[in-house]
Image (cartoon, rainbow, N blue to C red; front, top):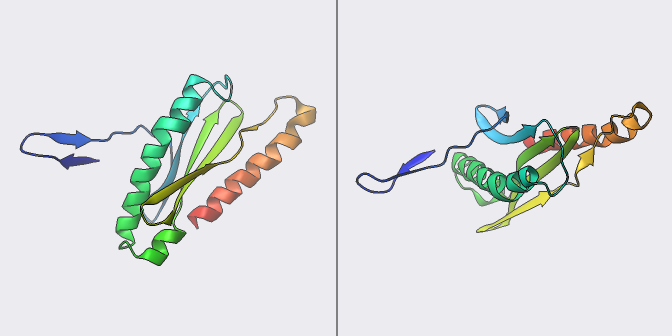
Length: 139
């Protein structure tokens, strides 16, 4: 997204997304993925969770609000979602606007799917439920 600031100044926000969640050509969410999980507070997870993702979510939310005509009742029901995948772990972020000029980001707890086959079912079911919750947000 680029916008003209003056005669020759252009501010641009370019984000590299690895996963896109779209419906009717509108972006409702996206995600980032990395091959290794090095901990909940690793540099990659922190950068995605605390810096990059909230900006992307807010931009997407603003675009959805413009598409909805900025109608108050519809805007209060909107949500954008983000997935962060790292190895066999997943985190879901959700952004909504409960009141005018206020955006709220809520995040799920980090779900880790264990590679041990005997404990695989305990980890995979919550991850499937998390994906199902994200789908309900988009519908």
